[in-house]
Image (cartoon, rainbow, N blue to C red; front, side, top):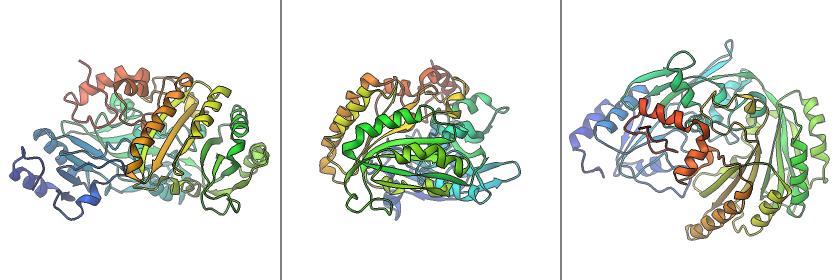
Length: 464
């Protein structure tokens, strides 16, 4: 029995008959597993989940949702912290079973369907000694990350994930199937590169690939008592790094790992993770100041396959943990900003919580403003609070702590925010995420989704 009583049973049966994949309702086996997403804070109960196996399923699900006036959620990897991949009472268009990947090693391109994760894509492209910029966790879906921009280890060298998008196949709100690229529907192509899920259901992505197999990468750990010195050194070190080198700073609890010295696992540390996407000997020279500073309490620094680096932080993104995030781009990483970060972090109560600084530079910042819809093209330091815990009784306190921390950092904010790290934070923050692109996106929204069918996202309302 469906939860949405306004839809007659016959219509559900008609959709079931047209669906090549699986159609799940609340009483069906597998429904509870299918409605869960990565963030354990999200507990929503859709009336129906359509587990698509191809474009036809997506078109039929979109048409059904539109004609039956259902709330629509679109699921790719389901990794977004805001939980927009699932809804209450409406329909989830679930693409997680759409796993097709085809690498063209001669053209140096790859086409992948919307249910593919970065770990799956990297495995296929790595077999040919090729890669495209992704994120930092293998379980993240390619769809959500790319549509929101896509910051990751290779951004300095090759740009954001969206900068490497060549074309995309899209099902729009009226059920049309369109290809968007530089020559076909170029306005839609512009909007897909940073406009999140506002303009339709992307069923496949085609990316440009680059020659890359091995990176020089790793992590240096310092006692938390040295965090101020570490962060200041990090700031100065990255101010002049080449495009090949990306480094992120963290405050987190040291994991059980071979490179963590005896007695350190379970203790808070300051750390810098890095990737050099060039010749290993050049990476060793470029990283020497970072590896020798302190000296560190623990180090891993080695040549490794790029997919190995991508999986290094998977353990810190375990599905099902309760998550609440806050993020802002900073104007600069000043001494006052560093001191505020450390002062606020002292009161953290969950060992699962992390604070990070992502350095965005190089090719990612050389794309002209307005060339894509990504709205934070000029910002260099992406600061984030990843609050995570396991006991629901702690939720109110953890959320309050995170908000207080984020508020303390506002004097240092550039005013921009990365859309992929944004929770449910209101229209003002959504506008901050899209920045100068917002009005143009609103006009595109009016063209491609005038009724705002796709509104469970960081939503841009149609221009009126």
